[in-house]
Length: 354
Image (cartoon, rainbow, N blue to C red):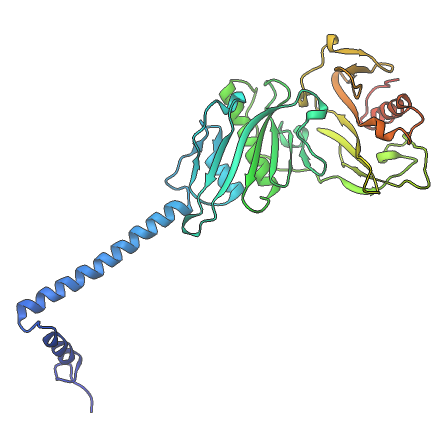
């Protein structure tokens, strides 16, 4: 038999019985019970909305700052590199744009607790040896990116301050997020920081555009004794009991590098470097140089491992790192330099050096 709404067994009847058992026996008491129930539902709903608002505030930077670190770091660029979340910076002393401070930026992970951090600083390279470009890095060149120059590897990226700023100044970003960020996005963050540092310093001819291209990392292969590092004319003395690997970058802009490593675990790595981007390091003045080979001049003090040559009106820097480790591959260190300058100069289209 079907229950009627108003019958004792219907919904209304059962509700009346429940209210009677709880002491709500009059109409007034029952009205108050209804009001309290509605208020309780409203309170729960309100807490839910407030909780969601707090969660959304942590999960996005919607209500956060547009920039941090005294406007050196763009919050949008940080979110693009490390993912969404509210952006903030830890207090620090000094000035990031002047190289006297390191700013730590945090991207909040909300209730899930996966906070991510990145450190931003300004560095300087005095010579090619101190360039912040480690083996295996992917570089980006001014010619392909509207003036942006730098490199990225793993959780670190570097970007040269734009033309018009002092040579050799770099914005450096280091991520601490548990995994390596997307290399292009991390490099874009470094470029953004370099551009903003230049603005703070009042240097730089034009703003740097958004980075859009990275060169591939160096490829490793067995050393070619007749064309070391892919340079015809650079040949070495073969040793039957010694084998080497070479890792060579694809292009020469902003620099070309070749790492030479013995296959046994006890050898040390040597390197050949050609820095074609003159802004990578402070310009070598006549007072800082001494005659070397042909038009080439030694740069800096001992050990003699870096040379400057003028190519098409611009300084180009050649470097042989730890040349003593290559002593048994070449008859003399002078012979190694002469072969490298001749073949390397031809490879980058420089006028004859020797």
